[in-house]
Length: 279
Image 1 (tube, rainbow, N blue to C red):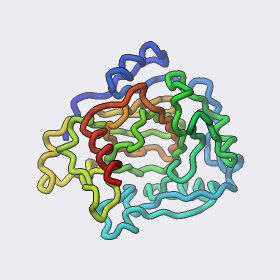
Image 2 (image 1 turned 60 degrees about the horizontal axis):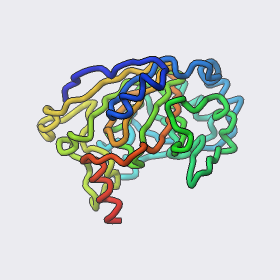
Image 3 (image 1 turned 30 degrees about the vertical axis):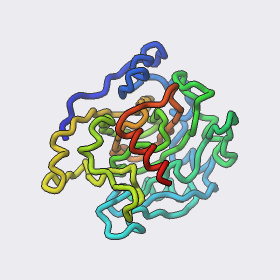
Image 4 (image 1 turned 45 degrees about the vertical axis):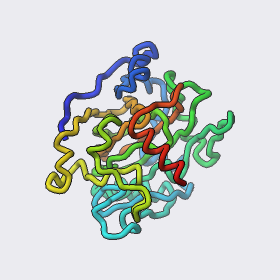
């Protein structure tokens, strides 16, 4: 895999963002979180005080990767645990190996379905600390998810199978991301539908430690890199593949997914449509 460029960085101006959305191009929006209380508040102590008693499921890994497809069983690949948010904050700050990750797979902040927006009542204090970015059309909002992780957590290369655009808001900590456009899907060795591994939106390739003898086609893949610091918003267009490495000691993020104004036609979108039709 070759990093061909770093994602552009633009100001928090909807007019500056519009060409990137129209062109399905990743971009980092700087300063878009100005005025968010979360930027000043979201420390382990604050989260523990405000929502510490909320029980959540979290992902866990002995290597920091999740899912960890190097593991011998599905249970180990997709291992999870359960704790209060207070316990998770304490574990994350004490464990620098990157073994624990809380994501909105387990508990959303807000979601919109059939014209109605619902806010999770247990996490409502956190949702009050953020704001819907100006570039997200409120009527096309899909889901708002929180992330909490320690240093070293890395997410496997995948695409979001909801067909949504994604804005990843970095609140505390930092992340590095690689992004690959949908047109390169055939080189990415996706897990096939119907196989034992259900993660059909994931690549079998560990892009952070690639085995080029097993996956020589990866050498021809071109990727875009992005780095996020507190206050940054990363735009991941619908169907783009991406993988993160969480580099801060205490990382918090909020993802905003929203439906594009029109369905996209590309290899990833067609693949996902075929998977859903087969179900």
